Amino acid sequence: MYNKLRVILKLRCKTLATYKTHQKEMLLEFLSKHPERQFSVEQLSAELESFSEDAPGKSTVYRLIGQLVDKGTVKRFVKGNSRQFLYQIAGGDECHHHLHLKCTECGKLLHMRHKFSEQVLNEILGESEFAVMPDSTTLFGFCKDCQLKER
Image (cartoon, rainbow, N blue to C red):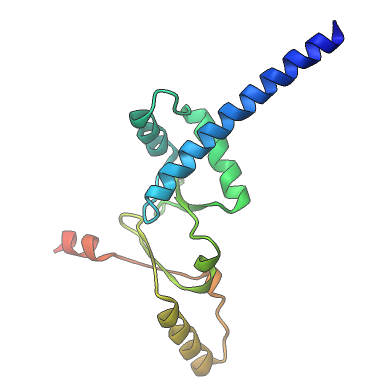
């Protein structure tokens, strides 16, 4: 009886693990298709539901996104001066070697070219003898689209 129960529990756990993995893959695939955009959990949940009937619910998206942030796969940002978080797929190892520009209006994150970032960082080092860490440098302002909206 005990062995039979153990086998059933193993099978159920395996099924649950696969289901969770499928949902995580679905979330990662969606974020990977939109690397320049940031989403709230509510937006992610709604977007995933519009694509698939077996999309994770909002509470599952919260849990999965937390795991992905902890692993460094997804970045978490604060939306403006609010208490809402926005999430964006991390750029991988190459993302640690350049500067970023973040629009405070729409949340768009732009990645500066490596050579340009290197020139700016070298200029700062030469001018002030201060070595900036490029992997944690984000400059805030307004993107081209948001500047045009203001006019």
